[in-house]
Image 1: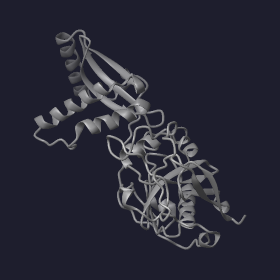
Image 2: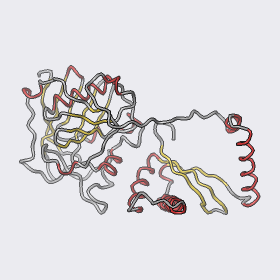
Image 3: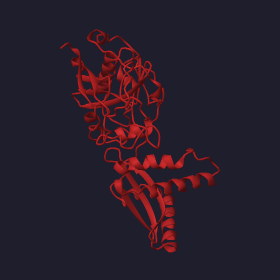
Length: 325
């Protein structure tokens, strides 16, 4: 085998749909040798629907009542394939990388939750929000990474989001994709570090600085950090709430215990609040939006809810990224 070797295995693709014998992409050792400079776009992912692409052969996601993507598409549950096909991959030894040019295998998808502990880098999120028509992948050996991407024309979009990967590993993934897919001229991805650290030709498309507050170990320690007037107002609000609703209590609800009815209720309250302020609700189809979010909350969610007399009267939804919300 050469440093850039091509191999294939016969087996079912995890998201297999109707095949098209004309919709193929030939990979050979000769067309994997070029490693010249190409632009690498470091940015938050500018999502695009890949359903119009006809350049590369791969599987299709099943149709459902919500559209093209079904809730059964997950690392642990895939529809039965209609028939078998070749699953081709390009091994690039000097980069310690394998690029899947037909479809990212289900076994690699199953690694995503443990690798990144992020609800935005799992197969369920890709299926619900990104709607990938075709899903390719790049695997690194040391350190271990599994990167899912789609392509449209000369652009590849990395689907992993809110995940940790250093500049050296990002560069290896980029070079591996460029070698295995010579027609790719640019890659759009989300970076968790200054783009200049990548040391590759790039253009910054969007910047979003995440503000993280380190909380003290106790509520008392937190309140000591507040100003005197703020502490006074908080005591006033608490006393007023206790006098008017003595049975008020806060409850935390996690993951599979979060019901769809609770999510829909919180979405409805949020919509009412926005309308009272004279603003417009940003989602046209609230039931579809709340249902998609609920599916993610089932595995990564946390709800903080206020109850009076056993009835939920307020709620806030969040998701775990790593061990934090």
